[in-house]
Image: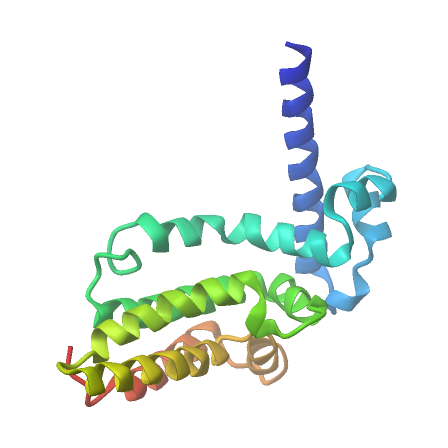
Length: 205
């Protein structure tokens, strides 16, 4: 019974830390301005607790990001159309990218903090790799043609196009367009939808 209570307390404490970090990033003028000291103070825990549970600042940011994005990932992995796997590719690809963009608009500074915290290539991160794989698969289904040569071309197109389309949702681009240039949320969504439409246009399902 005591062990179960300890686990429940640990989960509550973890969520308290994640919520505190999320709120600090949302209110910050710059993600770089949020420190582990700030997060520990806001959560009411010692800084050592954060390092023991999350490893470092990057690990904590990644944990917050993953917790907040999990409902979206579940919708993509198991949910209904247009995000879920049963959706027609031509319907799913624009829906996936719009969902990624909306998430980053809703969590602008958290998303930017994760991109800035990466110590290696952003293209090798687990989050990016997962989204790229989902998009690549959908694009290959959309563009696949009969014959080995056509299938190979479709696979190459899908891999490259998935990178290009995801680049249009990068947090630093969102910050530039929305945070600095003053583009509205709906304006950016419309621009992305038009861009995706041009990329997909002229192909057959």
